Length: 268
Ligand code: FES
Image 1: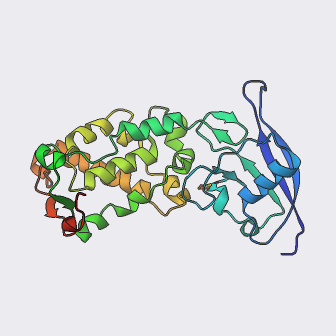
Image 2 (image 1 turned 135 degrees about the vertical axis):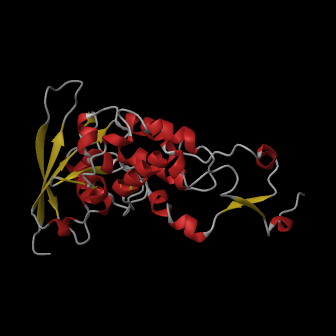
Image 3 (image 1 turned 180 degrees about the horizontal axis):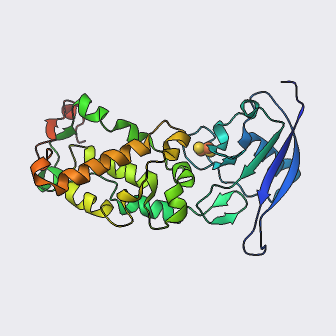
C-alpha cells in the first residue's frame, strides 16, 4: 500500500446538546488489511475517546456496525480501506434512523417492525406434538431453497437505510421486515399465513415498495429483500383470489419425522 496515512472524516453529532452534525478529521496510520472499523477504533482509542460507535463481532455477523462509508451503506468491519480507493474516508451514520450520537443510530423502530410481522414459526393443529415432541419438523431441500437466502439476514438495518420508501414513510415496515414475512409465509412448516399476510397487506404495507432495489444492492449477506417483497405481493394476491390460491397450509406442508438419535439421549 503506497499511502501511509488515512484521513478519516467522522460525522459527529450529539442531538442532546448540538443543533447540527459536523465533521471531525483524524489522521490514522494505514496498515495492510485495515478495515474502516479498525480505523475508527484507532481514532477512538488513540485520538478521541468520545467518538460513539456500535460494533461487536468484527466479522460481519452481528450486524452492529452498519454505517455510511464514502456515501455507501456498509458494514464497517468488512469494508477494507484499501478497496475504497481514496485517501479520505468519510463516515456517517445510516440514513432513515434517528441519531443517538455520532455513528450510533436508534434501531428501536427497526426491531419493532421486525417483531411486527411475527418472525417465528407458528403451528396450530398439533399442540400435543409441540408439548411432547416425538420428532422434528422437516422440509425437503427444494422447499428450503425457496426461502433459505432470507434466513441469512443479520438485521443490520442497511437495507432499510437505503430504502427510498422507508425515508418517506415511517409506517412502512421496510425491506428487512417484509423479506422476513416472506421467509415465514414461504416456509411449509408455518401455519400462520393468513394472519401474517394481513399484517403486510395494508396501506403502508407491502404495496408501498416500488421495487427500487437499493435494499438488495447494499445487503452485506447477499440477501435479495426486493425479490422477497415482490414474491410476498404474489402471496397476498393469491390469498385474496381464492380461485388462484395454490398453497393452503395447515399440516400438509410439514411432516414430523422421528428423531433417529432420540435413543442416544437418555435420561439419567
Ligand atoms: Fe458485527 Fe460488524 S461488528 S457486523
